[in-house]
Length: 498
Image 1 (cartoon, helix red, strand yellow):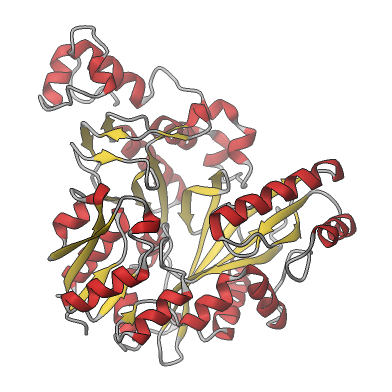
Image 2: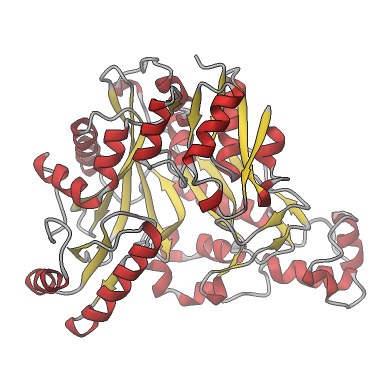
């Protein structure tokens, strides 16, 4: 087992990895930018090193700086988390060249699965179900020809990236040319590559993915599926495990397909095979993410398997000690991504100081976070505050528990999506698992603030506490007096959100 690991990331995933290392008796090394000098992952790590300015391109994305710190600190391995360098095959190769273990799959597996066109080719050779579309990257003329052949609506997708970047839904021939131009432009600015491919758009699609785990001795297992259909701007907001929609037969088939493509690239470590599914449970391969996913906690909650620890153990050479038959699902887990953003303004980020934060707790409640009262949410990074995860005996129990936990969550200083998430948990269609990736777009009423929203109540409390002035709302006074003063000033008992 490693004695010291460097975490090449920030935020809640860096904190998550540090905690896993601590439980394994491994020393940790953090890296940080100018904006993250006072970040929680810096405080929790055994050592911390500054690696540059706040812009990721000058700090967290500079692999040479990260590897130099690993060698200087004596770290034997690097855990990349998700985002940044996690799916960069050149970085994985650099680690190998410099004698530092990359905690993840091989550089070759990252390269093969990182390019969507190559991944589709491998999937086709492995006889995986694929959405009709182009066989590879296409020119503008070829793109138009393919779209006409498979029929509208179609999706234009960047070949070299993910996260909804370089992706456009086109409903008609008249929209195609401008959409293609915008998709190429966004793909180039995000990934330095403007190549795209075309896929048939699946009506009312659901996004379902399978977690796989493989060691370096040829053992490969799946940890069942997650559903991630609630998305905004093609990015996930709410995830759950297992899916509340698919049958046991579909689950079995999908998991077997996921293992086939993982085996095709000799996969080791934690990875996720993503599928798109129609309302008749027909599913098609989308891509494979060669890293730990943001939503991995829901799988951990229903299987009892610590994915982050096993990534470390696998990278150190350990064999998986359990067989597929030993892995069982128990209950249902939900994850809500709590963001500093305003749903009413198309989820516009809301950077600023966090004056007061209180996360919910209780049986079956887990909050993966890196924020604290007094910290700053900057515009340099993703505005996610935390991942609130709950477990219940059934999906209904989990939704009820999530609703209760969200109502306990207190954040003062920035706008958040807490009110939106609360409304989601109350929505009749969501509660029946009648969801798809267009759910939020079809329900704009869920974006409209209500008088019972956390922000509305807290802002009113803040104004009352400040004698009617709105200065505290702008961010000067903070909640240093504590929650009791809030309650006393506004005449409430306990938490007004309840």
